[in-house]
Image 1: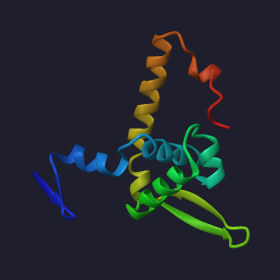
Image 2: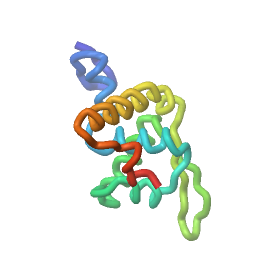
Image 3: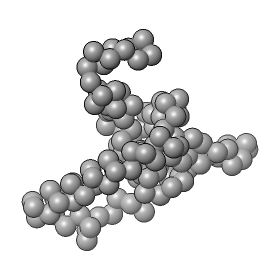
Length: 121
């Protein structure tokens, strides 16, 4: 067992998943990996199904865990840009692997994601 920040983990993978687990965090991180800097609305447009509240919560968690940072662009109207921190960037091999694996799997099932994808704008 691993004790860290008053929590108990079963193994290093458990520690990693505590930072990136859930449906949205890994998608937000990989999106920022691909696009470098994005506004709240840009991230939301590319994550169909996420509510503003959920996106806001996930961004706060990722910022708290020092995987992303934000830069305030303007106060009125309030605009920020999000980008990967050093720790978020260090997960790049995982984003690349997950993407390549998913594309390969889709191709094996007759879906040409690279040709037909409309997700990233």
